View 1 (cartoon, one colour):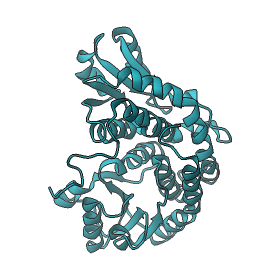
View 2: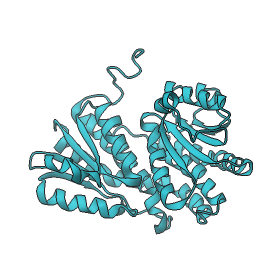
View 3: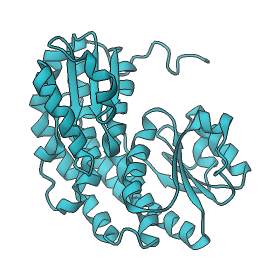
View 4: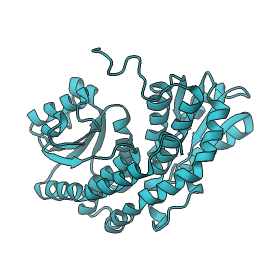
Amino acid sequence: MIRFSEEEYRTGARLTIEARAAAVEAADRIDREGYDNLFLTAVGGSTVPMMAVAAIGKEMTTLPIFVEQAAELRVRGNKNLTERSVVVTLSKTGDTRETVEIAKTCRQKGCRVVAITKTPDSPLGKNGTFFIPMRHENGVEYEYMLMYWFVLRLLYLRGEFEDYPRFADEMERLPENLLRIKGEFDPKAEEIAAAYFKEPYMIWVGGSEMWGEVYMFTMCILEEMQWIRTKAVSSSEFFHGTLELVDENTAVFLIKGEGACRQLDERAERFIRQYGKKYVIFDPREYELKGIDEKFRWILAPAVISTMLVDRLAAHMESCTKHDLDYRRYYRQFDY
C-alpha cells in the first residue's frame, strides 16, 4: 500500500494499547474525586473523536458533555465550565496554540485537565492535571481508542455502560482488524481517487457519530491538504438545502453509520441514488470486525471509516493530484 508502513502501524497499536492503563487510571481517579460535567475541547482534526464520543454519549448517559472549539471556548466561555468540570484536550503535537491556551485557562479556573498528547513535557502536557500518552505516528483510529477508553470508562463507573470491560478488552483487537480493512479497501480507494480527483466541487454527507469523519475528510484532508472545494452536510440537514445541488454532474459522497441514525443516512442514500449520477457510498457494515461483538460496531464504525478515508483514500488522492499531503500554503507557516 502506498504511503503506509505496516511496521509503524503495528508499533502505534502496541503503544496505544500500553496507554490504556493511563486512561483507566485517570478515569478512576476523576470518578473518585467527583465532577459535574465533561468538556471535550480541541481544534481541527483533534475534535473528530470528541464529536463521536459526544454523539455516543447522548444515547448512553445523563452526564452533561460539551464539545467545544478551543479558541471559541477561551474567548466566549461557557457558564457550565466551573472548577467541578473535567476538561479533555487532545493535540498530537502537544503545541497547538489554541489547545494549549484553553488548557491554561481551564487550569486557572481550577478545572482538572486531561491532556491527551505525545509527551508530558510538551506545552499541553505541562498544563494537564492528567496525562494520557498518544505516541502513534499516524492513525486517527488510535485517538478514538484513547478517547473511548477514558470517556466510556467514566460512563461505566456511573453505571451507564455495563459492557465497558468487555468493550475495552475487545477494542485491543481493533488495530489488527483495521490493518486488514485497509488492505481490502485499498483497491477501491485507488479507483475512487482516479475517478474523482479532478472534481471542482464535492458534497460529503453523513451524521451523528460519523459526523466527525465527514468534517475530517472534507476540511482537514480535501481542503487543507488537497485544496479541493467541498461541502459537508449532515444526512438530516441534507434535505433542507443541499439536495438542490444534486444533479448528474455533482460528485456526492455518503458516509453511512451503524447506529440509530443510519436510517437518516439511508434516506439520503435513496435520494442520491435516484437523482445523482456521480456518487460513492461508504458503508462500514461491509467490513468484518473479527473478535468484536456486533453490539459494539456502531461505536467503532467511525474508526473503520477513518482508516479507509483518512489513511487509504487520502493517500490515493495525493497520488492522483500530485499535491503533497504535507504541503501547506498558510497553516503553521507564519503567525496569523
